[in-house]
Amino acid sequence: MENQVTIFDHPLISHKISILRNAATGSKEFRELVAEIAMLMGYEALRDLPTEYVEVKTPITTTKSKMLTAKKIAIVPILRAGLGMVEGILSLVPTAKVGHIGLYRDEETLEPQEYYCKLPTDIDKAQVILLDPMLATGGSAVAAVDFIKARGCKNIKFMSLIAAPEGVKRLTEAHPDIQLYCACLDEKLNENGYIVPGLGDAGDRIFGTK
Image 1 (cartoon, rainbow, N blue to C red):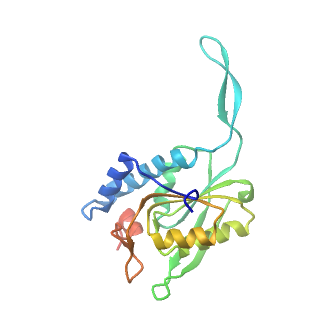
Image 2: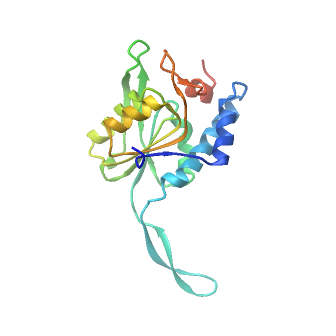
């Protein structure tokens, strides 16, 4: 599992996560921080994108320089909280396509229920970046990967800001072939399935709802 999971240890990310955790942080600042952290994480998560040498004419001479190959990239947020991370990744790869998966958690069983799924038609040929700020029980993450794999996609990376050990274990055991990137690994889940210490409900804090 060690090679499959990347837990970030960067002072900029740690600083911004601390502000996110603060109950006094308002929705505007919270949204901005979520996007900023996603962008910082994306820098590392996209490290293995393929490149090729192209000829570039500089003001001085002509040289060979690396550019991204024409690989398809699809960003897929899990609604609704995952929407907060999209801008950060799009700032790095603005030509990426964006799909959406809508899931809600049954408050009794804690299992995910699908209510919406709209993905790019050629997602089976894309590098998919699946986004959800919170990886708690792992149920929604596993279900989302199931939906994407059912459409033939084999290259999937999952990004979350805050993860619980239980969710990491469930996702990596269900889908050992995907890469998981977490800004912070927290202590545990409580009896209600919420991450401790966590940061509350990410969707409510991003959109200012209760």
